[in-house]
Structure formats: structure tokens, C-alpha cells
Length: 130
Image 1 (cartoon, rainbow, N blue to C red):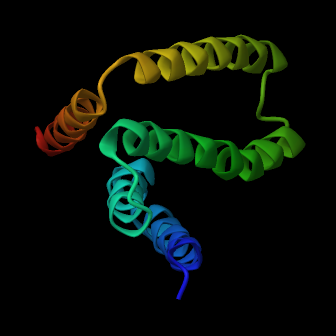
Image 2 (image 1 turned 120 degrees about the horizontal axis):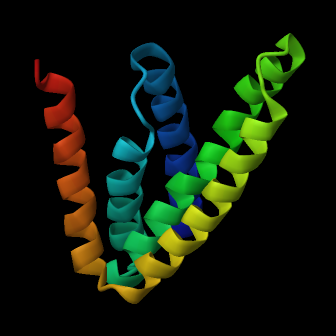
């Protein structure tokens, strides 16, 4: 079977599993998507870490757009959203995402992988501390 087709199917399964876990446990999907995507890209598509890690992070970040649209629309309908706050947040997010993407492309893939692992550990420690 074609590795790209297998990759596509595994991404569908991964997205479903991450969606269920995020809904049940409230975890951030990137904690699972990034390492799983990188593993699949390296082993199925023979993508090296220099290209695979930025792709994995970008894919994870792009899912935030879709997962945020539904609750944002619901809160907008309920009148829970202050348009001024949303405007300023959107501007900050756009600049932050652009700077983050630029930063991710300028550093070595292995370093990016290690930085991601450090952030995951920091998040885990911060949630387990009293």
C-alpha cells in the first residue's frame, strides 16, 4: 500500500484519538500530535527531522484554528465576547504566530525537538506542582 495513503489514514485516526482525549481530559492536542506526526513522517515518508519537526509543529498549530472556531462562534452568539478584546488578541496571535514560525524555521530541527520536549516537561511539572 502507498505510504502516503497510510500516512493519511493514520492522520485521520490520530486526529480522532486526539479529539476524544482533548474532549475528555482537556489536554492540548499538540502534546500528542507533534511527536506522533514527526514519527510517522520520519518512518513512512522518510522526512528528516530538519523538515519534519517544523511540519509537525505547523500542523499542530493549524488545528488550533479549527478547534477554536466552534466555541468562539458559540460564545459570540451568547454575547460572551468583547469585540475589542478579540481584536487585540487576534493581532497579538497573528504577530506571535508569524514570529514563532520564523523562529522555528531558523533553528535546527533537533534543537526544535528538544525545545518542544522541554516545554512539554515544564507543562507537566506545572500541572503536578501543588
